[in-house]
Length: 72
Image (cartoon, rainbow, N blue to C red; front, side, top):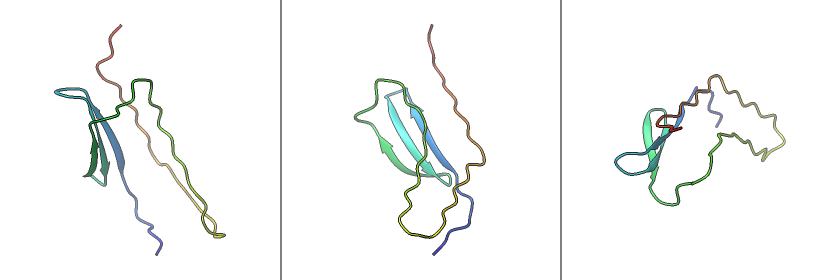
């Protein structure tokens, strides 16, 4: 079945009280990672796998990248 609804994906990097990543789908927490946190820069990316001969469309309407707690 084709899903033609808009969806919101969010990844939150928490530093305090302990470092973790939260993964959100449509404002529902779907996962948390507290181990194997990357120590180098993390860059967002998207990818589509074309698994059938049918045409695929992928639209990114809005993207926001916020970084907090930087020290110089």
